[in-house]
Amino acid sequence: MTELKPKTRGEIHRLQADDQQYLWHPFTQMKEWEKESPLIIQSGKGPFLIDVHGRRYLDGVSSLWVNLHGHRRKEIDRALISQIRKIAHTTLLGLSNIPAIELARKLLEIAPKGLARVFYSDNGSTAVEVALKMAFQYWQLKSRPRKRKFVSFINAYHGDTLGSVSVGGIDLFHRRFEPLLFETVRVPYPYCYRCHLSLSYPSCGVACLQEVETLIKTRHEELAAVIIEPRVQAAAGMVVSPPGYLQQIRKLCNEYQVLMIADEVATGFGRTGKMFACDHEEVVPDLMALAKGITGGYLPLAATLTTQSIYEAFLGNYSEFKTFFHGHSYTGNPLACAAALANLGIFEKEKTLSKIQSKIRRLSLALRSLDQLDHVGDIRQCGMMVGIELVKDKMSREPYPLTEKKGTLVAMEARNRGMLIRPLGNVVVLMPPLSTPHSVLARMVQILRSSIRKVIT
Ligand code: PLP
Image (tube, rainbow, N blue to C red; front, side, top):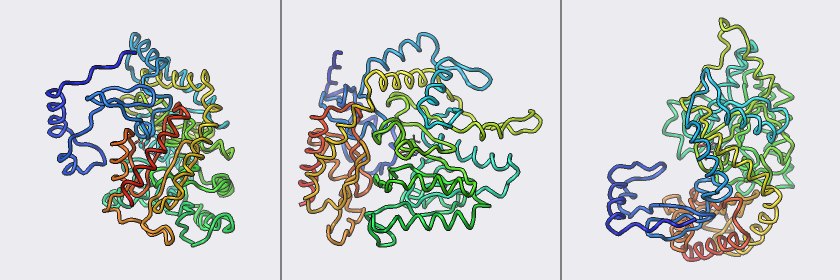
């Protein structure tokens, strides 16, 4: 593979000026953005992103948690080229297409056993939106229309469409839109480092589960579903739940006839060390939302998986109007599905899931070197997902005010040292592609360490 030539100074200047004049970047205060020269990526290779100057950066957050096998994978490139010679897009409304069919079959092969149907959409938010609407309609079709409320977790993040914001719980992102949202019933996620009951795991016996149990027990008649980020509440700051917690939630949902929606958008496709986070606890959700890694970080695609019994509730004569009236223009896009099939092919060919086990251990070992740093309060890891919580005071766990932007400062320093990461408030996130070699993982942690030390002395 030949690398692209860097752009000339004139070209770079024009691109930067046009970016600042025409683009509006997501989750970005544009007033600040306009003051800085934007970093513009031109190409990528393996774990590296390469900018218009020809500078190489390690992709420390898998291009926002999507890339799995590195950039420019020939298997996925070829699958796309081969598909584009056939057709780029055709609708799934009233028609079908070959990659969408083959991918559905494949997804159900690797998904927790019991999931039987695949509904496509375009991104994590819509995968969640679909799951919420399916759960809501399901209970109406089962003649239990009172079951319409969702149990959601404090600090959850399920995306940015209004339905997924409704079940979200990150005040900073979501509070402003409150008048537009539907009401949910909130429960705390087990955030052991900042336990709201002031207890410690494991001596607490996961006491916080009691709150969820009481709620479900008393209000199940009005509950449609519980929506949970299994094992890791990602955008909350990589908050890892204690082992067994997910299974207990599944048990409660079974006991009280409440559906369980697992949002595997961030955790799916090997990120936690198993194909899906639910696999760690042998949990089969009623609905499962997938996106991000589904195409190996190539194209937008999402899927909501569900059981045969939920699917069957929607069957009937046309005149009964039990149809699930939902769909998007690009639902089941053949190019994206072809990329996803090639992505899953790499998992098989390279035995990705078994290979990452030693990488996960390597990462844990390297992360220990951060423990002694004065302002590292908590290091959380689940597979290849890592969150390092920075604190003002290690003893009292006092957080830095968000306005000090410590996470961002560390990320900027890491960039100077050749790695791109994106923090979540005071939590520095590391989520390397699964294909990252052992030595590069160690280098990434080294960069993190020196960046934290430089910013916080
Ligand atoms: N669900 C979870 C758990 C996520 O982490 C995210 C994004 O970070 C989403 C849903 C939304 O996905 P998208 O950004 O593709 O809409």
